Length: 120
Image (cartoon, rainbow, N blue to C red):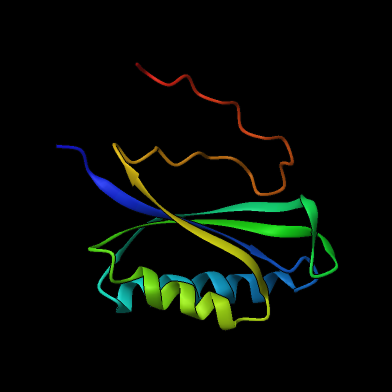
């Protein structure tokens, strides 16, 4: 039986200070825990250029949050992101299969991580 988990990717406004980014990361982590979920991993993907402007922003700070639970943690998490003025986009996807190993990529690196081959 494969294990399933949730992956939430959200984009913060590019003009917020770094300590406020950490506050948002901690807030969303706490929401998952309070809703009965378990935070598996949080990865800062850094500031990246958006494919198209969103609310007059051309860049955004990407954060990936991997969490586990029965799915009840997704609604409060997305509700908090929807009402936040600092989150410009978010998406939660249910993933099946083994949890990907956390990468030790420095936050300052703008190089995208190399794609790993997918087993068939």
